[in-house]
Image (cartoon, rainbow, N blue to C red; front, side, top):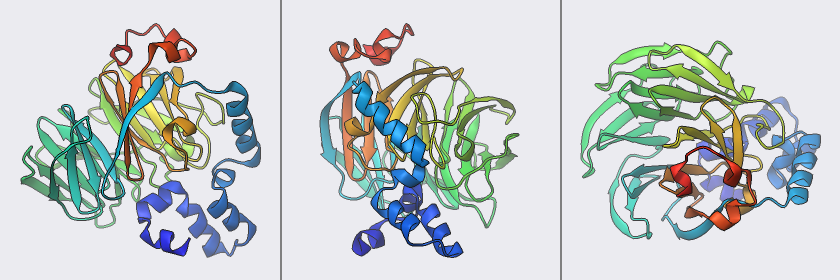
Length: 340
């Protein structure tokens, strides 16, 4: 256990629940609570009733995923971020960016500085997010731009990039920092609900010129215009399908070309689909399909496939008509290219 903990990054530890463990140390609450965290994190992420209800529900319903895993391969080191560039899978590990084909073949890689938190692709540019800076690379891996965070106390978590600018979540300031594409500061965006960020679960994405961001401590997904104006939010606490549980969920958000949002949760990991209006569609992958554990999985959409990363593993899931007939996803009437 000690050896594994030494190898775990601070971001990953907090994503899994390290903030709770550290808090227990600081206030002197050791023993039973800390042991439960290390041996059964789900009991800490969820209260006892939620944990039991979730497990009972999953066992009773015998969840069927509309997707089947068709292929998987391993990265050389722990995956810190996942992104797509066309039909190429980009993976960030400590000190390297790897570019894979859909068959798992390595096309190229290039070194970067450590502590990559997230990455995004926009107009053949790769944006890398670090705790206090942003670096921009061209398709060949050459750095073309870089700027430092606008605050010495910045602790950046996630970013999204589109014509509206570069939007970055900051776990320290508990806001969204918006930059123009040239790197100049546009504004800080505060949540009218107040962002509550107990750990690195501060995901962000864009769709249709709007920004969607998690407010994990409040179990919400919030929507903003490109000018930083608050539009609304959806989400509620709970252990059931279409609800967010634990100390801080959802961890990550990604958009689909059909105008849907996918959320990725930790504790008892799962990936779910929602309409842009917040209406719950279905759970797409549960913890068993994903591979277990307690950390959230990175997910991206490529046509009718889900590209999922967790630990060192990248998995490709394919939509399956025969399986989906037994699911809410199969009954969904949205014209969705993910169901080709």
